Structures are given as C-alpha cells and as structure tokens.
Image (tube, rainbow, N blue to C red; front, side, top):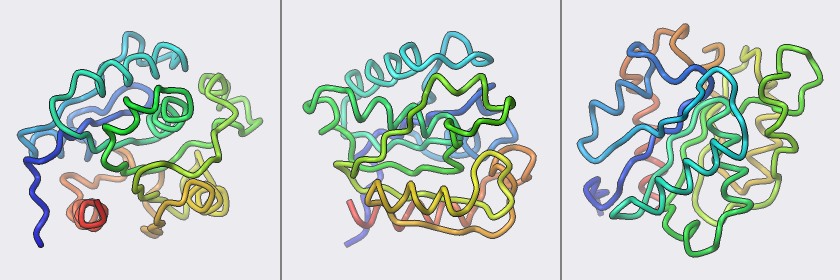
Length: 188
C-alpha cells in the first residue's frame, strides 16, 4: 500500500547554524506541504535543554503524527528529547530519519560546542528510524554511526563519501535521500 504523505507532519530538525537554502533539509521543506523547520533561539551555540525543549513543543503542537528529519546535532537533539520526554509526546513520533549523527562525545576540541548533548542515549528507539552515514564524515566515524544505529534499533544506510551530508556535499534535493526516506515511511 502506498504511503500517504498527508498522514504525517514532517519536522526538519537542523544541526548547528541551521540548514541554509542549499542544504537538502531546506529543499525537502519546499517539497512537502505539511513540513516545518524546528527553530532554535541560538543556532551557533546549541544547548541541550533549549533545543530539546523546542522539539518537545513542536511535537506537542503538531496536528498529526510526526516524522522527524534530523541532521548532525539535530540527531542528538532528537535522541536526547526521546530519552526524556513524556511517553505520550514520544508516541506522536511516527519515525525518524537521522542523517550524520554527530559524535557529541568526541574529545576533539572542535566538538566542544556540542558536548553538552553527551552522553548520546544508546537505548532502542520506540519508533522506526533510519541512520544515514557517510564514509568520510568528519563529525562521526562509520563504526560509531553503525554502533548508534544498532543500539537504537534503526536501519542503516551507508551513502559512500558525502562528507557531513550537509550543504558542502552539494546534494540539492537529494533524490537518493528521498528514496531512503520513502523506505522508512513504508515501515511506519
């Protein structure tokens, strides 16, 4: 049976510095009429309490079940929110597309701004999920991305070499990513 996209609200959960116009998340916002972007007060300095609070409010306000589309520290936002939100709120999540899950526990100083999201929850997610990873992502190694997917009970997609799967990758609408999203939606 085909997936009825109007059954869901798509909530894009960007990482640090938001998702500029060239980012695939911004392209997807234009593709789905029933989609919105999670807005944060400070895109430069992610703070776990503020970011997860905004996610909780957005899920609560959504009129339909929500499909979360996270990238980078947006993935950590989704995981930290899921681990601490009330069960009734989490039950509104139909599934999650989790691209480039930044390793918030990496000791390298370049991760200092996102370290407040550590530790990354490693419990099985209560909704279907897909982790999408790149072999040359400077923010998460392929073994760590696979470890996260396994712990979360998520499917896993290795998309080859696409860096951090952000604007610099030049993915545009990212048709291959839309196919991956379609596979996730088919499982819901």
